[in-house]
Structure formats: C-alpha cells, structure tokens
Length: 224
Image (cartoon, rainbow, N blue to C red):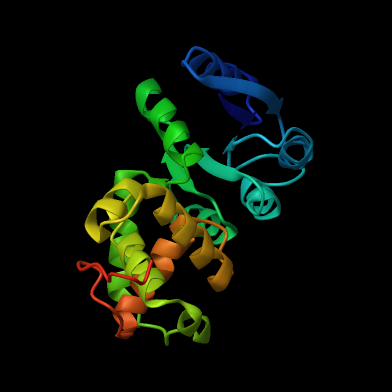
C-alpha cells in the first residue's frame, strides 16, 4: 500500500486529488494539508511514501516545504505553473518528480506509483526545457565527490543521467534490480543528493564536463 499526503491550498483541487488517488488500487491517502507548513508537520508525523505537493501555498511555499522533507520522503510536485523558477527550484529542493495539473488521472496515479518505487518523473514539456538549459549552460567542473564512486557506481550514475529506470539500468548492466537500487542509494549518499532526479541532473552536468569513467553501456564483472 502506497501512503500519500496531499498538499494543496485549494480545497476543491485537493478534494479532486484525494478522490482520484483514493480510488486507485494500492494507494491510500493518509492526510491532507492546506499550506506548506502543515504539509511538513504531517509528513514528519505520518511518514507517507509520497507527498503530492503544490507550489503556491500560504505560510510556507511548496518548494521550501519540499526542501524540509525530501530527506525522508519522496515529493511529487504538482502545479499549474511550469515556470522555470518553479521547475528548477523544486528539483534543487529534492523533489522526485514534477508534473502539471493538466495531467490526466491515470497518469497521475502512475506517477505516484513511479515515485513511490524510487524512480523519478518529470512532465515531458518540462523535460525538454531542462535539456535545453543543460545544452545552453557552460559545463561546470566535476565535483570532487565523484571520485568516491566505484566503477560500477559510475556506470549506474551515467545511466541515471540518461533517465533510465532501475529495471532498465539492471538490464543494461546485467545485475539484479535490487542491486541497482542499492547502488542508487549509495550514489545519493556519497554525492549528498536528495533524489534520483538530482542525480540525473548531476550526471548530465558531469557528462558535459567530460569526466571520464567506465562505459555505462558495458557491464563490469566483479565490480557490483
């Protein structure tokens, strides 16, 4: 059962989200919040698997709230606005996903399941803008923390940069999916990142900076 906390300051929108998620098999809404501060309080109290977070809310906005809770629960930001300041702000804060409120019900439920499974998800048109931003921005130097990654972790890290799921990474590198999850967790810990989306962004920056490493398309026997 996936426990979800819904945070949105508009009562009608919140009720609709609760109705959609509550009707989905294997999903349970365990709490509702009408502002960001209450969302943080309930997240700490209820420890849901996923927090569905609006951006514009009173007392504490959704990005600030995400920053406070992303370390112990996954946050899926759902907003009407796809402005760059919200997109990049949410992802820097540690959100595991970013969707727009025009998403249909089935896609919303699928996104919640995806995030709860430890994957990341970003709205398609937002993804295009992220890619364009990476292409236009100068490549930053590779942070020293990358040197702490093992050869196998660098392979997984590169795959994250391609947007591959745990299952796809496992298939490409010929290892168990549970092992992939372990590698992803270690990568996040070593690099001080809050989500795999942040890891994907860092991996793309690293690729742009020309950091050398094992070919992610090839497995490395004995390095898992």
